Image 1 (cartoon, helix red, strand yellow):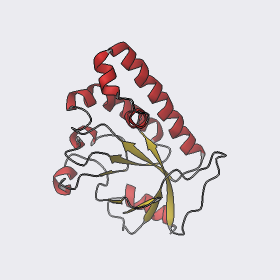
Image 2 (cartoon, helix red, strand yellow):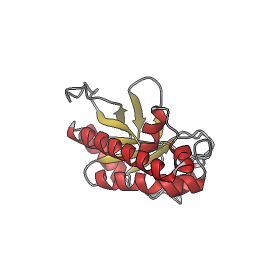
Image 3 (cartoon, one colour):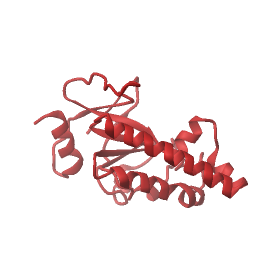
Length: 194
């Protein structure tokens, strides 16, 4: 069984053995050439969600939506289009899967109403478009109290989060799929072991 076959089994079959190492990162250069992957690793490409793309550009989408809903929605739609293009580019580069970096679903970024009202369905729509085509791991940002109850039913094969104080067993009841993944963020590329 190859590394990718073991990974697929680990993410899609509840009783499958683990022990697969996955490389995450932007592995394709500007010409679409995918970089080297270590033997036994599957190659995932990290894609920021629309909120994260805006944040990287120094834009507070929640504040824009609050100040001027029409202009804020227009700006959000622009970032949805950019995220969709990033996802399609990652699929075209033949990545083994997508690490969808979900920013904005935690108290330091938004309130539950703001995330649920403006961003949750956008993330769901984008993930629904890619879920049948590739392996999807959703990585929920936020070091404290991420809104895992909101994002737990997003279409994904697995979910990871940064918050160290989150009890896996209590979250397991609200999230479908594998959640017992250890996301190790050290140097690039990030690796995950299932």
